[in-house]
Image (cartoon, rainbow, N blue to C red; front, side):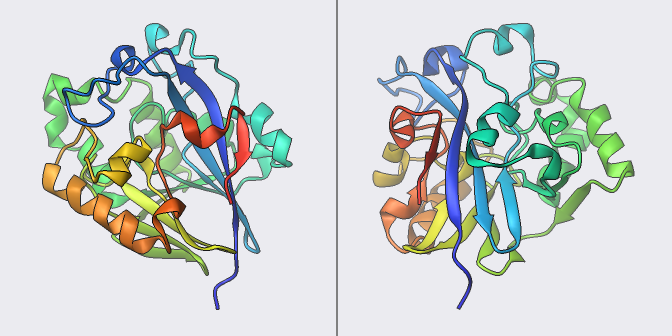
Length: 254
């Protein structure tokens, strides 16, 4: 029987509303765009140590307009509330390369970043000759990524991978070509951290794909996979739903 893990959600910041964030919570005609947008990363604690999911964003790597406001608190301060020292973190799983998920790598100086090869190759490949796609990766990110590759701090994986007993990476694509979810064995059964496969609980409950995707069909299939992988739907966790946080900045979800 795989060992159980605990999961904490950590809200590093909160955008004023979906409209200003530039992303769409469900479909493009979503009427709830004036709700706040939480920016959440995750800590998974188990017998093999702490695994962090996503890095949050770092003001040095995003545009000034994007970084200002958002009630930002750096991850080291918030993680200290649950006894996690980021200098000791050895593994960070990156769900995908968007700025709120993967520009905070400097907060984790000793970590190795686990990334789907499809994600890495998309954002460093020939399609970046298109300005619209290229500008989604901030200019300083690629040099930093090259440096971490040379230092052996990036692990590229292909498809589904068991990271530790009771902790599995699931490549689903959809939102981005190499988007991945994390399936975690817990005391209540198997939980799924969805990444941006699901921004909100509505995405999951109504099987509505998020409004930002590179492949719509894969986005739809990914939602089904999240719900069928989790022991029950309440154990599938979206990445930008304020209801998840229960009015707190750090919350143990299971």
